Image (cartoon, rainbow, N blue to C red; front, side):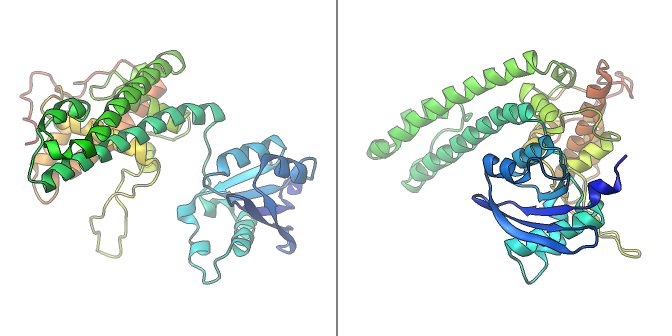
Length: 358
């Protein structure tokens, strides 16, 4: 149980790329110190190593993961604030690093729950997740180059054949106008190299999932969930005991609608899009497959197609998001229990399946 002594000193640390501003206050809310410190491990260890245990309050960002781990290793309590909840800081007319550090300290002293604290993943998980993010960066670069080539050819009156992104470099080469070859051949060569790099990442991800994270096997029982999605899910959430239930996972990943109810007014709003954009995108991609022409019959597919069949504006989009949200809950349940997945557990397989979304 936390003692009074551990709450005597609260330090707000506004992290910057080169320097961080700090504000130290006591239990009475009096400012004891204000200043700045280099955002470097040596400087932080020298300044806060061996000092009285304090509560540090940081805002989640680029440096917050390693800084929070370092301060915890030094014996301090660390609270990492969710930036979405720091309206008090972003809403002020006196926005600067010194004031931000003081607000962080004061909010952390009064009630840390106001900061909606987040928990950073472990260093090992962060390193493995970097593999997936690096692959994602190459995929986005490849897509941008493909769009560039198509745009240049189209603006010259030509048109390239429809094909998959991995085969684009090979198939497009034959249809590029002769006059544009000096400009576009190097781009096509780069696309070929990117394909090789992405395939290497895919192989690495398969190895990581099989050797270091065997629990991903339970998640891959669901059609449309491959090694990439399963590993991203496990690394992003990190612990199967982190959430109360599967519904909380959908909310954490930003797949639940916003709420702005007032009286009898209950407007239908977009999803919050909080949490990991990468994992949310992968789950939506899996939902597209589940609802598409190649998705096998399952309770999840039938449920989503029923939502789409209701019609109305953006019915297909709502169905995809709903399936992605329910898929997140399903994967979390499989991860926690290790059960064998039954695609048609809730309904008889003899029922007539609904046709796929057009």
